[in-house]
Picture 1: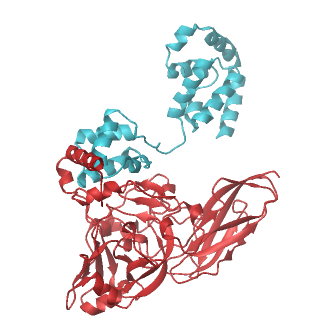
Picture 2: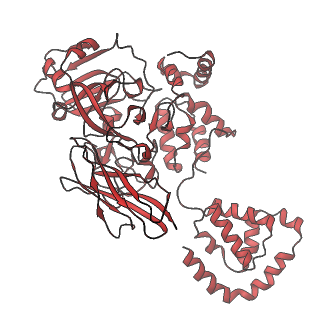
Length: 389
Length: 169
């Protein structure tokens, strides 16, 4: 990545001021400085590391265009050349393996559409507030992911009977003394044929922000399992002890009082995704005219389960109408929903959406607070101001 | 909340309207130079408590705009507050009795010692955007700053205290 002398010097100045800690940051930090130049229509929550949200009104199609797809990165985007990239597969296996890009591309590929949602999507709604990226609605998107089933790679190395977890590590290097971003997938899930080592997204090679050259996609589970810039798979006989498995991406076993803290031993890992819906049109605080034909639309998803129905209220929840579900559907993906509405009275209206999945799970009316600000799944609400004709 | 205000006000008004007329009028006659040298707190103590006590203020949770409207309403009802005092009182009340929840922080154009410290130490790894997006109270900032020093941020204990005081005043 090319950097101007000025940018490079500015980084060095900052690095010198920081002293020893920066020595650990390493060369990748230079690439990260360039990340400050981004991102078209996306909402920049953090320019470096890159945390970019899709404005929810731009979520209009079942497949999210790549340039609109949200980006969540814990550390700086590494610069990787695919000619020298390798994937190490080892641990509780009969024969460890080192795959090159060519070798991976020669293996049978599969395309799986899947909705990815950041575990922290909606964190900005929690009260009291929780530290972290203050996502609103748009840390979610759906793409067709193409790659090699993780199960096929694991079959090649021969997983031992002792194996219980598959650890996933990427080429991103932690900042300062931060822990490495390593995630751990239970073997049972990893062996399902739809967990992929992905190199293409909606038919195009991955961009660096989305994990070039290879990322994992774990369909139906919160986004952090889908590790980017994958370089190392370790099959293990225990869960990973690192902070991003043992402390983060976990929920209290039971709801706790808002603002409290909870010992990690009293938490469980987030797996799957909650049933959830978001209204993407009209936009919050939109102004419409009495008598207008308005289409209320949005998306609903439920991780590994399918959506059964989405109900919409245009009167603050006093009454509900079942919305029409879009035709596009696939396992692990969201459904579009829409409802025509012709407001007959002027006034400021609260519109709500509530999804139910095929297991009968329904969105709650109020949030259970959690110290990580994860899994915001409350009935979505927007305000629409109806002006007289 | 506004309902409470009205009921409390009306009931007290009838009891205190005599005092209101006397002391309110006295407040209005005080020399301008003396008023300017008073703090907003002193003005509130002097002018508002003629009719009601501070407890009525303390239970409000209003934005700056909300407080401006209230002060304007009270002036209409006879509070002896002049134009120059109105903004100061509204700002003072908004800073103390505002909607719950931490306020967003500004870092980018903050040249205080703490602001400079944030720009120097924290932006080695991430931008000020991430700091400004947080809505944390003092305990939340303490947890974050301790975590960040664990992750390599160069902050002494004194500097952490300085930052907490600045980020969650």
